[in-house]
Image 1: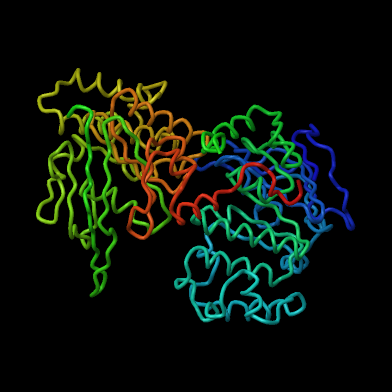
Image 2: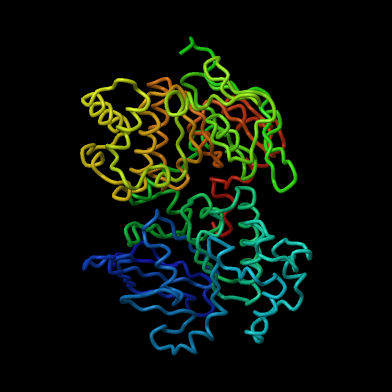
Length: 278
Length: 273
């Protein structure tokens, strides 16, 4: 991954294994919103560049309002963009027709924080899978629902459940299963474990790690939790006020942070006392 | 305040909830104490009963929930039992509560100044205007709010999330209660803001001798803040002890599993490192 903000190169490329081009290539992305009842423009993302190679797992960390979700939404073509260039799986989003963008969608799967918000309450797990297969007959890899559920460590009895009959952790696993069904090349996960209990979070993270290893997919992982990112991501990008303040291989950045804000984030992590004594 | 001893004593508390035509037991004979100046953490996952226990102390349970057995005493005086609920006499005055969502515990229609004044007028008989103004400003300063004047004249929506939570804590402690119950009061905050609030809560206990019952799902946060930790699971306290003992030498399987689920911080598990 390489990433820059405002033309300052923060890291060298780490592209030892790059069979095809980057899965996601963002150049100088700017997203501005007009604030309510005001003529002022608010810069949610201010000139961010990022190049993700196949197999990269990039963690985007930062506090609320830092622009990490806006960045992810713009990167997938799901959110607004004021300027800048985005190449998703080698295709320039500006040159794609709506139809072409739609054809690209299955290869880029998004997992959101609130799984119940992304599942149709009137659809059982089984009929949800069926619908995805019907919509994307060419892409679906899993022909066996039970095997697919097994991949996310859910039993076959879940197939006939409706979302309200699923716990938060189960529902999030169903969402991940639905994403995997499309054999995505890029998964964008926006705080996928933030609403979950810590033991459930650990399971979901294991699951994501395994799925990525099996499929070779890349992941853009948005999180406020540095410990989670350290466990899951090969690279990290630290955002503050819409800009990237520091980026690079996870261990390099976290072991030797160069920016004050990264240090501040590290210092604010709870559990310092416990980690020290252990 | 009674010398040194116990501030809050929960003994063998059993709490049940009427759900449809059944009765569910939410707490199974839970016992716990908090001393003046002590920070006790109630940790556990969702549904473990930590919020039910916290709310029992202040008599803030939902109407379908009943105290089925045991008791809660504050400074030796029984405030909660199956027979009686005397929490109204201590709530706000001797015990304050801070919730997760500060914007919902503040009245959106009134300025911070008038909300603080209302609490003081209700709980401090005969307090004068000057004293109200002085104590209001003082408590916000204690909350490490720099421009107290602006904050006092603000409505809740004009403040950031971190400031709002500090105001909510200020509101809970302006009457100088002996006990503060905080339920996930930093969960909605950014980590850097959370770190500031933790320092603040610690100083309430250390400087003012406030006893703090701190409910959290975050074991690491509890390890930074608490003197003792009670681990809750399915309505019971499964392990209770000094923070270092519980976290470094857990005895119960459930505590061990919880600790194992905390993301590691040594980088060794990073797949690409």
